[in-house]
Image 1: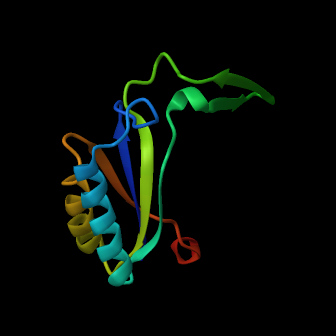
Image 2 (image 1 turned 90 degrees about the horizontal axis):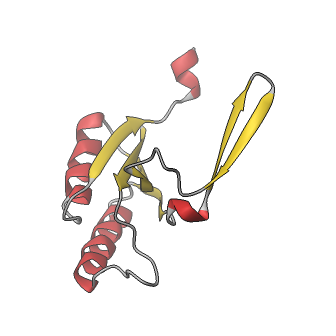
Length: 118
């Protein structure tokens, strides 16, 4: 089963606020372990919302808002896509993922498969 681990934060790293070397070492080590275990399908960090655009489609129209978004407190900062046997296994990896951060909110969700509609 495929699962996406999405992490949310209000603390973004960039050129002016680079990630600490300890964080990078932990994250690199975990991603290497995930890859070696054959469970890592993809994973990326996202740039700060100020670099993004939010588009809302409603009643045949659309509203485009340049980031950052005033109503957003914690937003998606990145994701990891895993192929594991169960939610329990996905949660085991998410606990290890969360341990790389000082403070983080993580959401673990199964990916919709065609068989979900059969």
